Image 1 (cartoon, rainbow, N blue to C red):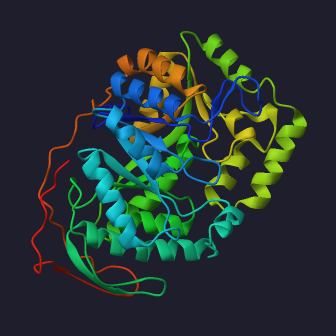
Image 2 (cartoon, rainbow, N blue to C red):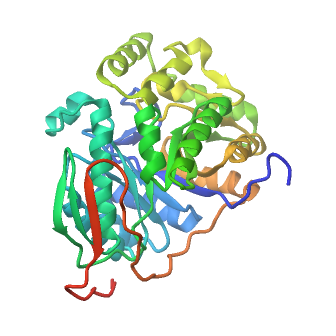
Length: 397
């Protein structure tokens, strides 16, 4: 096997623009407001085209991810939904019931995107005032309770932030012991949490050397816990039949951006976010139009005005496929992609890129019995026992 040969098929996912969509960044021209019927079109298109799943973002500027996923699941057949879970904005027992119900409604097509960060001002508006590292410590306790209940255990836990005394889940999820947990964080606290409790670690689209370093750190931390993780990357794709067409499309995406708009956006991102991942994204281009190709075919123009994932792979199908294989060679086996506008670009990416990649084809997972190991890791006093007081309710949809 050569260096660029992937070890497993690629899970190619798409993005649901629950905060709005459009043809241009930073401009009302060609904008598409949030509309559930439009989101349904994207979900059904990606389901038909063979995408593994869709990511639903979270934050004050987005429709609620859990409610939106619930509204769209019945209109799809195989598509999985990667739905945000925000520790601190709900309690772990209630979240266990919600995400178990979602998994049952979709017959095992739920995935969980754990989100600890965000804009501290927005988080404070929602009632979450913990500092950066405290949010990750809080999330670690949250996950221990949530995972225990999802696995069918009666949970006894006393921690610094959370507690559960006899917590249990009567209606189990389809997937055992719980829907897979995806998590992205670039700080040491984020890496530690991913290594201890996540199933897939996600990174934004940094240059390959930087991604390799992050994966190596998370992998070594996970080994301490005797765990093996999967790895994914979140980025945009601008694929056209020729290189020139692709780069023209990239430049066209920001053609309506003024220097003042860029400066305001960059100042806002720098002062209002405590995210290490956001800092790394912004550092790639420094707010300058002159330094946007930060690695071969990796373009940071999206990040001039967009928070979060700010890079795109740009090029003809063969070139973009080769760049994706370079990330696969580092251990990446999941790509969560997007493109503006998301409906049309979902078709374009599938038609131009999928034939050149070994893309996994999504099927509804088989039902499995609920069983899981006791969780005895992390801070706090934690104990789980099998719930023998009441019979488990069979998973039905």
